[in-house]
Each structure stands twice: as C-alpha cells, then as structure tokens.
Image 1 (cartoon, rainbow, N blue to C red):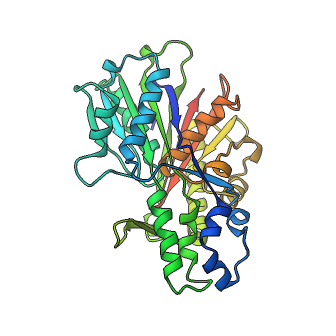
Image 2 (cartoon, rainbow, N blue to C red):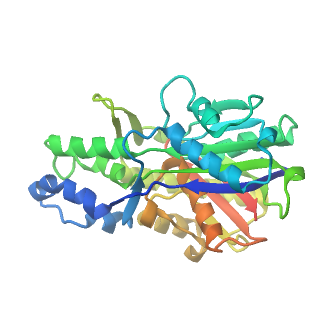
Length: 344
C-alpha cells in the first residue's frame, strides 16, 4: 500500500494516574505463589515490566478514548469541523451496541458530518485505522480523520487475579494466564489529514505492508468471563515464536515495498509486549536494538494504544526528530502484522 498526500498532523496520549507495580500484583497473588513455591519478582524478571497504569474502577473505554481525543485536538491546528471520520480503534468497548465511537464522538464534541465507527483488531487496531483513514484521504472522500483508542485492561487483570486465587492451579496450568498480568491501561489519539491542512512540517505516512498467519488464531483468545469480567488465555511461548516469524516475513516485504532497510531506518516503534519479545524480534530482523524505543517497562502492554503511545513518548523526549525514518511495526493476536513507513 502507498499513500501520497497523508500526514500524521498531531498525536496525544492520556494516561491514568493509578500505578500498579508488578510486585504489588504478586503480593495479591501471595497465597498462590507460596503454595506453588513461586519466586517473588518473577513477573518483572520475565517481562521487564516494573509497573503499569490503571484507570479508576468503572472507567468506560469511550471515556478514555474521548480524553485522548480532546487532548489531540488541543495540540492540533486542524479545525474540528474538518474532521470527516472518527474511529474508536481499541479492543475495549463500552458494549456490543452501539459503537463505542458513538459515545466518544459525543464526549469529544465532533461534528455530526463525520463518519463514526469502531475498528477492532486486537493490538493492531490503531494502525489498521490509520490505513483506513489514509485510503479515504488519498481517494478524496475526506480531508481529515481523528483516530482514538482507549484501552481498559483493569477488568482483565482483576478477573485473572480472582481466577488464579480461586482455582487449583499448578505451575503448568497457570501459564496461559501469565500474559494477562502484563496488561496496562491508557489512551491515545491522532489527527490524520491531507497534507494541505498541515501547518508546519509534514509528517508523512508513506505506506506499508501487511501479512496474516491466521493458522495461529487460537494462541491468544479473550472473551467475557462468566462473572461479567474479562478472561483471556495465551500460549505465550508459541505466540512469541509465531509472531516473530510473521514479523520477519512482513519486514522482508516492507523493505521491498518501501526501499527502507535495517540500515536506513532511524527508529523502530513496535507493539510493546516485553523484554523477551523485543530481544528476539530485533535479533531476528537484524535491526540494531539501539534503534528501538520502549515503554513496556513502565506502561506494560496497553493493547492497541501501546505502539502509538510509544511513538508519542519517543517524540516527547527527542528520540524521534525531524527527517527521521520511523518504522511502525505492529502485531496482534490473530495473527496479523502491519508495518507502516512514517517520515517524521
């Protein structure tokens, strides 16, 4: 896929104030840890995640999405009446119907003329939404889109702790639940628009490639729990292996499509899983790990929010600068992989 006139005009993040450390989660699981003789500190040791943020109990995904949406409009120079598309791009949703985008659209105060819908694809939803918006911009259907994602992983982590404390688990049977404890909360939003609307430097979205490996769709599955919370089980070892293999295939096609290589990219912004994933991914792709920028240490895995929020953090501290070639490398359960070329 290639885009001609599409720019990322602005980007903003909204984060909860409540911090949950990995050690505090393990303390809640003390009865399980002591029964199974599990070493405390293993959660941070295995993932590299020291802490993550949590929204207050009862926060709706549309509340989080709207907070980020209002934040990005606060830094954007594009008038809100120009926005012709609004997408809520998170895994988390308020309910099955109507679309969570409807609630967030109202809370942000976007124009009635904008198309409004949800686009959910595990951790890849935000990048998928950028592609949809970019295609509509280049085809002349709209001139500007606002993409927002508000992820609330608190119900999943809470349900996982309850399940692990109530069940008769052994060291092997707890493994599918371990990835749930890495989840954090957050929100992010971006204004994607035609280059003619940009004041100042144009941050161009040039194009990218995607690949799927849906034979692995059973490796990570989440749904509503019986008690009304959220439940998810992940085969983390197989997921890591299959995900990195898919990323390698996508990266090879990305280079052929864009002409970019491991030597010519300035920065790689990836979906944030943990230290083991980063280590194997960069080793497999042959990219210098110094080109990575990570946030999982303090934010955990925020689903669809992680990659764009990490880009925002990198920009804020000067790790992404004018003229940089930034490879956005997203992957989500399913398995699906999407990589975009962003010229900052």
